[in-house]
Image 1 (cartoon, one colour):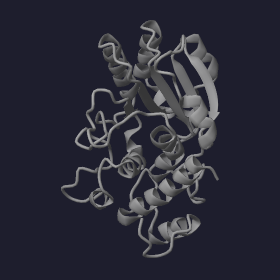
Image 2: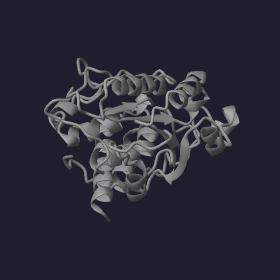
Image 3: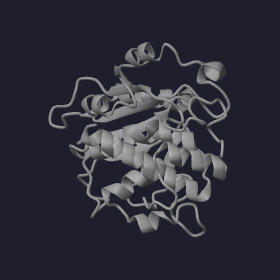
Image 4: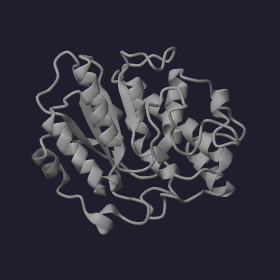
Length: 275
């Protein structure tokens, strides 16, 4: 395994351990995008400063599918934005670490979770940075079911119209949403052709190949591309947990104690092992 693959495997273990403490929901949604988040933070893609989370020179990362918050929390913790002891308050009374992201958390730009808002926020942020003549980049992850929202496509038109090549749009394409397969609810295909027609440089990628993602997601901030980049990252919902992988009901399914014990075993975590 390469270093980035080892980091992704480690973050998966830390995530499932965090989630198991409170028997959290939205486990499958986090597991489908945790490799992408790992590459962004530890694959030499994002520029950030844990000692100064609001550093004006930072790149902006927006997790539009805010229900995957615990995956992001573990990455931010590992990056040094806060301690693991602080993260252990996850979803406990009074904690800032709730089930959805908020800007109270160091390293989080916006409150997200109301689907369809993240890409518009990213577009406005990218336009603002360009007007300020900043070389900072904007990365945003949306879900595929989220792409059924009209606001997503309004934002896509805006990104192409304003030539926001300082923005990278990543679609977590796991083909499942809250209640069914995305194709059964509202089909997105041909997604690649649609993105190209909207003016993007569309790229298909394996959303669980850290090495491939690291190559695809890096943008030269000193020599921006001619078109904004949109990456269709094919993923498996619930990746790594057999009981959740590609299961139609995995979006909100809560594992019981036995289910978590089995999941922890799959990740090679022993009872009582610290994360």
